[in-house]
Length: 71
Image (cartoon, rainbow, N blue to C red; front, side, top):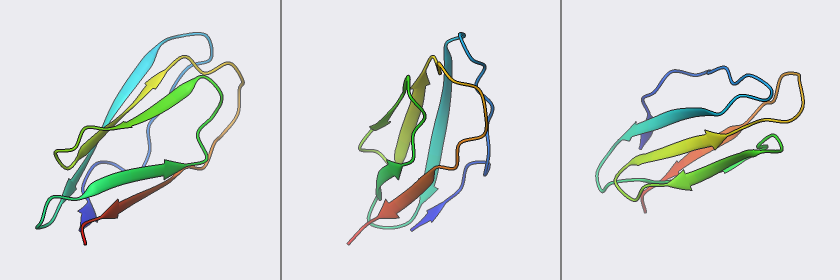
């Protein structure tokens, strides 16, 4: 499987944000994430996509690792 969404996004401290992660591959991939900033959650949508959402409470750059698994 491959992640097909853009490699970066921006969330603003104190403001709610959302970002959809997409993937390709067969069978449909499940997605996982590590390195989330405080206040932001990750949800696998079980359809080859996932959602980052929330309100970050600290400034700075966070490096997340998103992994696609399909077998």
